Length: 517
Image (tube, rainbow, N blue to C red; front, side):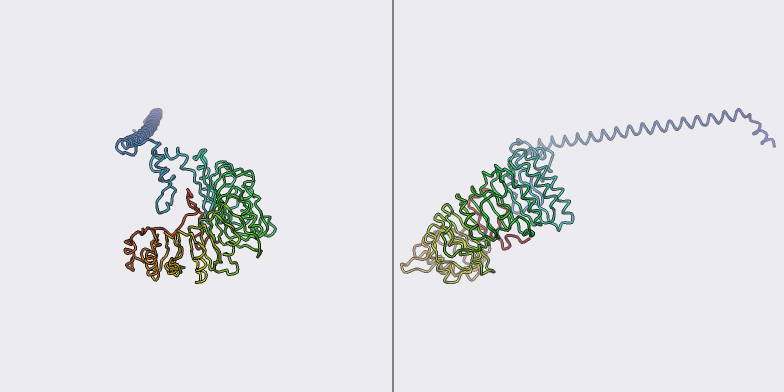
């Protein structure tokens, strides 16, 4: 009881004072913790700022060290800019998955600064989308933003534009066309390949029909889908003329035009100043065909790929193409009714120098006195057709052929009544896809022409032909033949000769051109 009495005997005011002292100490401790935590946060923030400054200082030190040790950083920015442009023009054999200008801008901050500041690096705008891509619409929207970036970085430089779109993306196509059309004064080359419903074709026409394109040199438009009934666009089988349907405000620099499918009937640009014309996969009545070609007085190069001329008169004056120097004609061996080779008789070409024939199985009795270069591809001529062909080119100097005409090698070594072989001026032979059975024919022809005093001076062989000759132990013999130069070639001939840029839509030699959509 004494212990209990001692506790309870503490005065009340003393307990209250003890409680107040405990709460005061607790508050002081809490404020101390808060102050220390605040101080710690300030110190951590300061440490992070110092760490960031340290990283920046190290990066700057590394850049300066690189500039001192790496020789490339000693080059002036102008030189590096020219190097970038040269690398962009020659990317190598394999197509890079990322464009060079994007790739080089991610190498270093210095490279990025130079690349972004080089407008000529950003003058090739490519929009390519396929519907099989799971997010094709999102990709197209992303590429719309990319187009804006290229247009900004290319500054005032002329640029090329390529649309290769498959799928129902009318809204995005319209957006991109509207954006690009605002810079029509800078267009240098325009390529459109659309596999869309006819509505998109109408969108293209609406975007292009009233434009003025003063710098535009090259137009390539590949379309295939026929319009719906009642649409004012036509596939070309109706009567058409040289009235321009796009670029009505003028295209004074336009020299190269390629039109495929319904493009000729609904997206035809001004043609009066064109020098190179390629028409593909369209039907024309003869009067329209005559009107188009006759309305191009300075036409130098003409390519007709699976053109169907309907209502051809049996007796009419040939179309006068007095300036034409290069002609390509492709038929369709699976359609015997079209007789594409008959088009040759409808053309008067007194200055023609180069003729390319593909997919023909007939050759009319006709003479081309000025042609010095003849190319045959997939032309299974019969013996009679080959004799007509040999008589048709008295001034021939260069002959290009593939494996489809092995018998002509034998005929080129046969003397006539005067002891001379066909084409006595022939000096260059290019062979593609030679078969093993043709090796002896080629070697015998080379030997016989030397004996008759009309030797070849150059033989061009693609890779397969060289392999076949090597396996037959004749390549070395051919290379050692006196006066004969044996060179390589890739089997693809640029057209027209002297074109200073790469024509990405060139598909004349492809089996599936124009691509079916």
